[in-house]
Amino acid sequence: MAIKLKGTGRALPDRVVTNEELVALVDTSDEWIRERTGIGSRHVSTGETVADLAVAAAKKALEDAGATGDEVELILVASCSSEMALPCVACQVQSAIGAHKAVAFDLNAACSGFLFAMHTADAYMASGIYHNALVIGAEVLSKIVNWEDRGTCILFGDGAGAAYFAKDPESQTPLPYVQRSDGTKGQVLACGQHAHKNAFYEGEDNLQYVTMDGREVFRFATRQVPEAILELLGKTALEPDDIDCYVLHQANRRIIESIAKRLQVDIAKFPSNVERVGNTSSASIPILLDELRKEGRIKPGMKVVLSGFGAGLTYGACLLELS
Ligand code: UT7
Image (tube, rainbow, N blue to C red; front, side):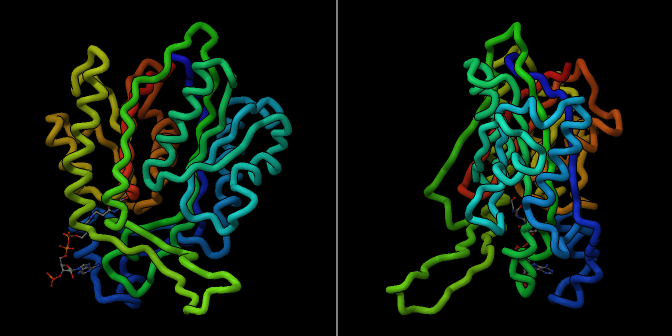
C-alpha cells in the first residue's frame, strides 16, 4: 500500500453537555436518547472554532508521528461547518503549524469527509505527487444545529481528529477503496446556511439549520454501508471476520449494531465512542482512530476497515493495514 499511518491526534471542546441538560431545551429524555442513539453526552464549543480544533488535533498528530510542520507536503481538511468561508481551514492549519511548503485545501463530503480526504491524499501519494499528508476532520456542528429541534440537536457534537500519513517508498499501490455519492437524496440531510443574500435580493435573510429525515438516513446507512464494506473486501482476499477492527462513522449505536449484524461479525470488533462524543460528522472517524491507537486497541499488523456515511448522500469504506 502506498501510504502508512504515522500519527494521530484529536481535540474536543472542554464543555460537555449531557442528555439531562438537553431536557431543559427540548421535549426529550436521557432514556429516549440513549435507547435510540446510544449517546449520553457530547462536547460543545463555547467559542472554539473549526480551525482552533483542527490546529490542535493536527499538532498532536504531528507530535505523535515525530514530524514537524515544515515537512508536511499536503494538508486536507474535511469539514461542513467552518465559520470562515475564506480562507479555507486547511490554510489556517498550514499557517498555525508552519507548514510553509504544503499545499492546503478543504473538502466537504459531510460525515464521509475524512474518508474522502484520505482517499484523495492516498491517490496523490500513490502517484508520487506528494510524499506525506495531514488529513483532518473538524466540525463545530453546534452552531448549525437547531437547538429547538429534538430530532437533530440530541445527535451532534463538536471536535476534530487528525491523521498524518507518509508514502511508502516501496509501494505505488493505492489503498483498497469504495467511495460513492448519491446527490438525488440530498434533501434527506441538509443545511442551507447562506441560502440567498446579495445586494439585489429582497427576501428575508433565511439562515437555516440542519434538517434531517432520520428514518431515511438510518435506512440508507444500514443498507449501503454493509454492502460497501462487502464490496471493499471483495477487492481483497479477506472475509469480514479477517478484519481486526471496524472504525465506523459514529452516528448512532443502533446503526453500528445493525451493520455488525449484517456482516455477521462480533460487535466487539466495532469499537464506539458515540456515548461520550456523539456524532461529530467528518471528525468522528479520526477521533475514534486516535482513541483506539492511544489506548493500544489497534496496533501495527492489524487490518482496519474505516467506513463513513452521511449527507450528500455520500458513503465509502477503505482498508488500512497498520504498520
Ligand atoms: O451522520 C448521519 C447523521 N444522521 C443520523 O445518524 C440519523 C440516523 N437516524 C437516527 O439515528 C434515528 O432515526 C433518530 C435517532 C434520529 C430517530 O430515531 P427513530 O427511532 O427513527 O425515531 P422516529 O424519528 O421514528 O421518531 C419516533 C418518535 C416520534 O414521535 P411519534 O411521532 O411516534 O409520537 C418522534 O417525534 O420519537 C419522537 N422523537 C423524540 N422523542 C424524544 C424524535 N426525537 C425525539 C427526542 N426525544 N429527541
